[in-house]
Image (cartoon, rainbow, N blue to C red):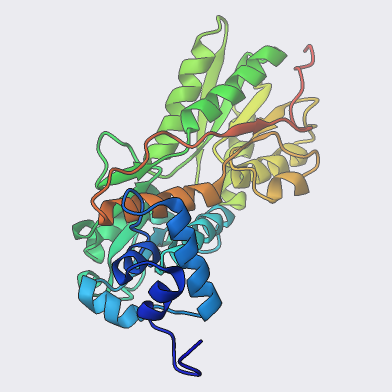
Amino acid sequence: MARGSTRPTSRDVAQAAGVSQAAVSLVLGDKWRGRVSAATAERVRQAARDLGYRPNLAARNLRLGRTRTVLLVVPALTNEFFAGVYTGAARVAARHGFGVVLYPSPAGIGPARDPFASAQAALDGVIASSMAADALTEIRGDQLPLVMLDSDPEGSLGAATVNLDITDGVRQVAEHLLAQGHRTFLHLAADVPSWTFEVRARELAARVATTPGTTVRTAHSALSIEAALTATTTALAEPGPHPTALVCDDDKLAAGAYKAIRRLGLRIPDDISVTGLDDLALATALDPELTTVRLDAETVGERGMQALLAVLDGRTPDAGDIPVELVVRGSTAPPHAP
């Protein structure tokens, strides 16, 4: 490079790529589509890499009036699913020069300490799980560009929503169990006021009702293994037809159900089939391994960040729910005759 050890500038990149400085700004600011060709954009990026060019983010942020910082509001940092959401969001954010700050709202029922004196002054936007929506008003996050995850699209607080196709996931579970011959169901439902869990309960009841002679009983549990153990023990001790299939709202509840079933001297799946929803690492640590619905948490994070970037740029985010997949393992089988 002609300037020796001097830090390369956008003008150097423009000269090396044979384009204008405006074109360099468009490409490195990821605003080139529809303005310069893909070949030109790649030539600019290659020239920047060859020169070791790094944009002056501080100057650019001052010019744009942005901090290039996004807040991700989740119920808890210890939840494996939300760790995946963060990974996906941070990956997309890094490609666009943004940082992601995590803000936990434990159990989705109350905010943690506000990490910013003024959220509006410190953030460009917010991505929030519906399970942690209560935290938004506390940090005034609902007054910023906002994308909601797992949220009712008809009543969302956000400018955009990103959802997994939970309806289809529950449909796959119900059809799998019905095809095996199950007719008496116990639903271990998460005792959390959240749209995503309302969908699970509503869709399970609707799908099972399509087959004559079926029943669904519901037991509610907090989102913990011990709470699920207690709720399952109580529900299976109640009089009435013994359920042959236990449908759990997530894998952690299924783990608690496993403990209860074993303590009652029952066998999985011989006496009762069990399903989860998440496909956490826990699902294959259980014995037998758990039949569950695989939710791609990293894709949720990626799509959430992409939607927020679109909102910030005045574009319409991509529509459509994220597909899910039933993973059949050893915890489900046809019911044995009484």
